[in-house]
Length: 131
Image 1 (spheres, rainbow, N blue to C red):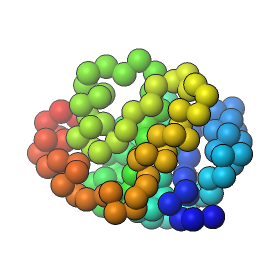
Image 2 (cartoon, rainbow, N blue to C red):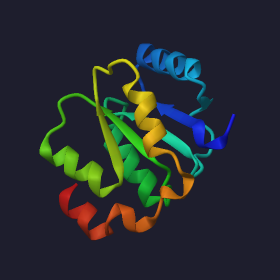
Image 3 (tube, rainbow, N blue to C red):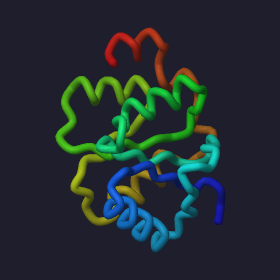
């Protein structure tokens, strides 16, 4: 399996986690586990309803220097959440998920691996201002 098809799913809801793991494994994605180190060529899939908040988790990941591509699964995101996500370089995908929306977004966001560049995420000042 090519490394650019690896994903780590961060979700507290066991049913959602199981559903996403099944769907992505059928699509041929290499599923990593939450305890593993997230490398830049691994795509982070984070549920906003994750314990502690998905956006809070991603903010901490960025602050720690993890610039891996990320997708935040959300329900009815408001303007503030959209602005925060954008300032962190995080792509939003609204639930409920339809068809192959997630796999298509992973393919768009996580390939090519050199798509990441710190400038993509804006300055820390901008992120703090809006988040």
